[in-house]
Amino acid sequence: MNRIILLAALAIVLCANAFGAGELSNRRAPGFSLPDQNLKQHDLYDYRGRVVIIDVMSVSCPHCATFSKVLEGVKRKYGNRVQILSVVNYRDNQAAVKKYMSDHGVGGSFLFDCGQMTASYLQLSPAKPTYQTPHFFVIDREGWIREDFGYNPLYQGIFEGEGIYGIIDKYVGPAEKANGAINVDGE
Image (cartoon, rainbow, N blue to C red; front, side, top):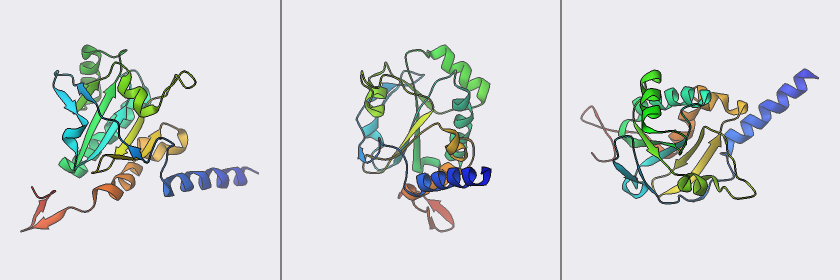
């Protein structure tokens, strides 16, 4: 009996990974402009032509801390071919984000949202007023949400391991080599 349950759970994970995930995918990514921890504005349109990962997270979320470290690996692997934007909401302030970055050894852009951007991406409504963190979106080079994943133990390999690389590889494509150096997006 346990073997049947294990096989069923494995089949669910494989199907989710094979077909992408998330009911919030396959739509134009809503535009936004949000300030980061240094008060620099980040407009989604400025990243058109690059793959963007939007990570909706909270500094008090233990799964978010683990996922932030996974995203550090994404930065190392893909460099400027992928832009990662971590989004925190009104409960997290600049001091809390600064402490989170220091405590977990992570960098990058942490954007502050009053709730509107998050509500738009997660399609929150009076009927669906809450969400769990972390939740990330993969936006392709043309500005379409292609995949989204909310934390779930079935996606542990994505949020805590290297499973995210297979997802990103579908949208980034291989780096081109020119004279022995990597040429990223014609740069």
